[in-house]
Amino acid sequence: MVWLVVIAAIAAVAGSIVTVGEDLRRDVPDSDFSVSFDDETATITVEHAGGDPIRDRETRRLAVAVADAETGATDRVTWVTDRDNSKRGPGYPVDEGDAFTVDDPTVDADGDGNYHDADATVGVALDASDTVRVVWRGTRRSGAVTNVTLDETTLG
Image 1 (cartoon, rainbow, N blue to C red):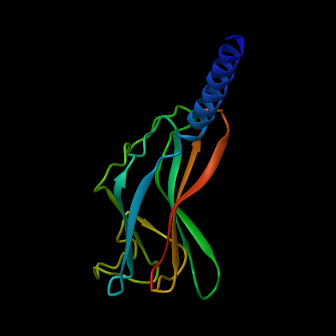
Image 2: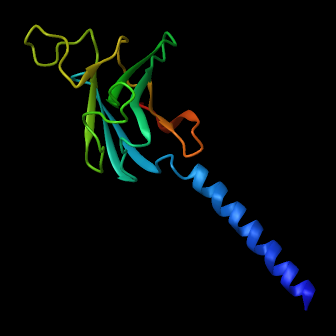
């Protein structure tokens, strides 16, 4: 009978360790994104396609990084970010259906003389062979700050 109590206690401790470990990992958002490229306007649209919203409490920054396939150069633009160290910032939460557009600095898509026609402009020319990453930077429950790629898409 004593052995049964000891085995039950060990199982309870092991279960709580697994649960605590899961809690430490769980705060990276499990979000889906869709990425599309409009060749005519040279714009990339990144849309939150479901899953967890991106919230300001655990998120420091949500960014879109574009890697130019020809040159290998990468440029990153910020979708949402915290102000200072307050853990608060404009644009939160990023929910399903919210979108962010990135444009090419060499294309004036609307012909108004201003080459910045989207939410943000990257420093590389965009084409269908580029790779786009959605990068989350946040503080995990353990206190560690980490960068996680939530989505990676090659446009072509």
